[in-house]
Length: 511
Image 1 (spheres, rainbow, N blue to C red):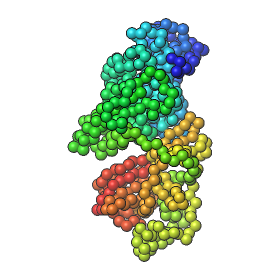
Image 2: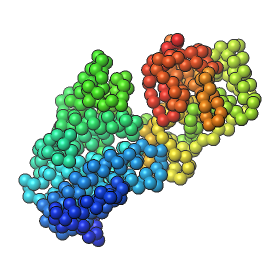
Image 3: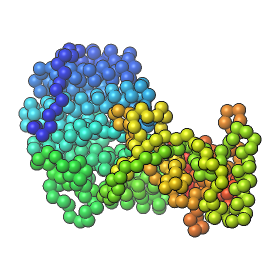
Image 4: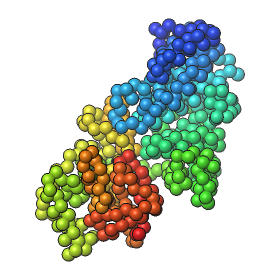
């Protein structure tokens, strides 16, 4: 396998056991450990087995024992790094590092042992390697951490080895994951490549886990082919476009996505016809509307995305949070410390009375622009980037942002946030159309020992209304919201368009 040079095994760790009986004795010592300590111990023994001079069948057998112990730890470990604010705290970082290293090293050990097995026995270690690398990749998505190129290369190496040995599509059971049923190496790899295709970082933690389960059930429907499948190119995943050049020779380059697209369309239709997400095995966490929106989003991301048209680099100062966004858009402080903050609202109402709402919102202010604390980001290749250690602020996406774009205040959302190994952040910025009308909720909200105003942002097109309010507002569907300093005094939220970390975006009707 000259295309990829596997990392050298560690030979300085003494194996804790030599046979299944002593392995079970050693495993009992893990029961008294914390999940993190147990994971670290398993990682160390995986490396010990990988570096030990054992016959290949014994290596695979011992790795299977360690793998069976690692699977139950997954849920406990991943909760410690599941979509935490970025960059992660040291304890969260440690849990993530142990988990993804465990699965990466386990996969490498299986992959290293596979060529030493007899040809009829190579399918099992290759299937175990594919599963391990897929889980290592998924850990990065759960943690919103940038997945290293090594994981891509390891998945492709399994694809090349399975194809060369004629076992890519051979069905095999997996006792550690009985819920997945019998499947193939092809299915594990297709599952991983599907997740990579849909930009998993833009999904919420709940949405990502729902789609991961969906792809686990549909993985065997997606076939690898040497030639592009018949039909529209939009239903084809070209590995050369997904991973770039330098792919291993002899691998099938194309995945036919048509079966998955059809499944998505069927589920969307059933949801619209009144089926519940739980009936369709989408879980209980999402409403029918939210599940429909999620499936439509995934369907959109399965289609080829147009490459970015701008390669320019520019700087931008991002302002975070609804209250700060209010200050940027109105040049007023929503909750001033002094008692003079209401004068801005009075001036604003007088402008609307004289000029009308649309014109008043565009009028220049004679007041000096407020200085609102922000962060310096760089936009390059249509991604926003924050340099490592340039700020102590930890971020959770999607979140509400504001900025001066072309000299004009704009409201937007930061999404697809991910953290690079050095602590730098990257994300996508999406701006709402100009003309966002800024006001507040009429009802005050408790914050500590005070009552404060909460911002409200009105978006209007033709006769449609949409409202963006802080997540802390407690707004509910079907319950009227009273508004201040906006052209409508009351709106009824009827649908959640988007739910972010610090905001909720509703479609509304006039009550």
